[in-house]
Length: 112
Length: 392
Image (cartoon, rainbow over all chains, first blue to last red; front, side, top):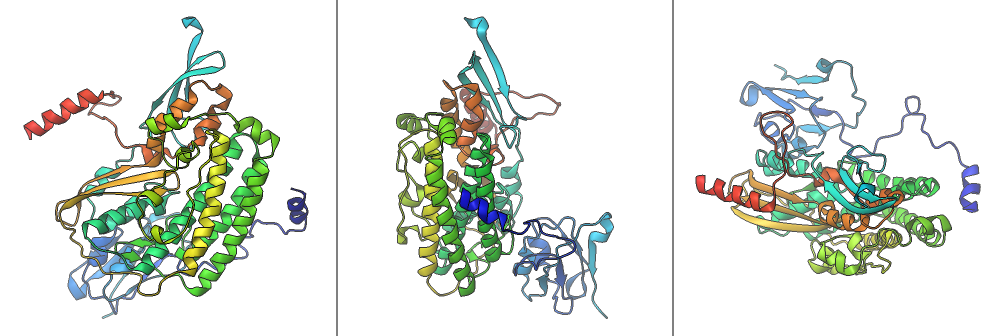
């Protein structure tokens, strides 16, 4: 016990100064997802496998656009696993809180 | 004498309980004569929800049955589906899953001992243990990328591999955790205030533990050597040497000692597994449709034996999914422990089985009108079931 006490005396404050000093998120953290529409083949497997129903497909096949509802997404990463063309990637961006639900919908459109 | 008997409700909301659960305590003075449990405050309809989701989606549902033993539940579910598929996952995936399961046990046990220390008012120990639990949480974050819902176990293997860099760091952390736990164990078994609150409290004799189907550390603290990892080995547990820890005190103190010893044992298992990890792939492809059949799979979750039953009808969704979480197995035992104890000891006895009620609640009767609930005896339930089948 005395040993712990002495060690704690010499220690710095454990609380992180979060919004000012940001810690690097761990590799493999699943944050906001990014879809590369150039690679998307429009198979719809991500929509089929998503446990939360967070991905919506607008249109059909290779012409389809994707809409992601981040408020529903629980960041399990199954869409990235299911995607046959590996066009879905999870970034490590995790600061996604927002006051408006609309801002949490991301649309991924194909460039024509 | 009957006038002196009073019924005290503990819960559904009570400082001693972290989750809603109700115990009606019949007391005479300070002494508890009998405890009657009431379950069902945390029913979430997971079993029904599982039948309308695909096997892949259910992985994430199974993970969310419990936040603390998430790895154990998802392992149990995935193991069941893999049994239905009659496949063996690659040896490396088995080792990775095993390491994750043991890390899960580590953080759950450290959490429990901390909570127990908090319940008896020893908050210094609580702070120390939770500080050290943070090391384990960081390790889990390092391997899986997340802190609570790992999304790591997939059907047919695991999502990511453990690299040599990670392995080296995990090993270093395991040594720290082991050294500190040994110190806490030594301290806990000598510290007078802990002994006074835990020794001889919540006695569960070995014959009672067997008769009431207790499981996990509660059973092992009653000096019965029973562990699913040893009796029905899954993953690579038959290739790894480990001891099944028991203690013969039958009280809360011996439950604490069992948890400490299991933490030490788990760090040894992780180190051994990291050293002997086979090379090769860590994931295999799995079909979406699962062949018809039924399966019971069980694993040793940190709190005890966790059982999942899956019935498949050949489609991509299960026909029936049933979970028996370890806390449910321990509830008759905790009622036995509560009878003949003192009211002041109720919080630590309740905490003693490491309860997790969100895992436990499964059955509730609800009908149209609000506020209508009732209880069925087993006989009535059986009659209802027979009638339902005849009319089908």
